[in-house]
Image (tube, rainbow, N blue to C red; front, side, top):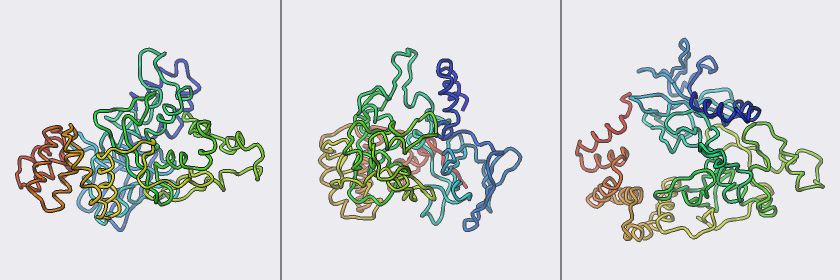
Length: 405
């Protein structure tokens, strides 16, 4: 947290009141080093897991061993996940604390796992929405929304940006869609258009509230459709502070509401997130949503064959609907025929070939992916399984050693 707060101190020289409010906000405390004194002990009896405080250290115990929980992810307003260090790399622990229920349970991502393990690395992609420094958990700081520059004039004020650039600042973390895909050789920076960095596809049949569905729900809501660019995340939310009067925001447009107060209670109900463990989130589908055509681009463009094909593969994995793979094949083949520099594309094709029993072709595509980007421990391990060659497993271990417990 030291680097993050050092940055805040620099900004705080001129913006002291804002910096003080920010330090108490969920964003500032969205990740960091575990302080055992502020944590609770607990057990997950069905998995023989126990969280214990040993002096100033929080530990996870199981019958065969124990590990120090050194980092947290999540502000604890809803819940918090935990991580441990193994040979210099962070891995997610199979325990999470849910503040609304005051109990320990499996964290998001593990809910349906009958045998939770310790082999899930926390990557920069995972950490990017919980920390401004993707090398270590340290909370969301100024630069995630305002950019980074020694020239103050080049810093970004989201409220003064054009609508697409303004919304992109929030969408970088609060927009998942049914499928979110990184675009090749592009990186988002505050002040830019997120659409140049990612493709986000919406599906017609997404169930309920999702953890990162705020932006898509708002965009397809009838309230947003009527208000247009006038309504944005900043209409209701001050990212420097948790406190807000949401009903007052509603009254900014609806001068004569049908109830004098309590707009959000009816029009933005809370419900359990479908992909967030035991967390509860607020619906942003204000007034109901306008139906969308299946796998429509959030940004209003025609998806490329590459993106559409990879989306079908992702959805097939999520829903166990193999008919989606039949739709994916011709799209992926067409994308690969253009011979792009796209290791993710080739690794995806390889996984489909391997699943279809076409081992030699799968090996060829995995190798092509690795030639373009050698630092892929997951791809190396898959290649080791297909070929039985230890050199691939050894290379994967050098890049990312997996815990042996």
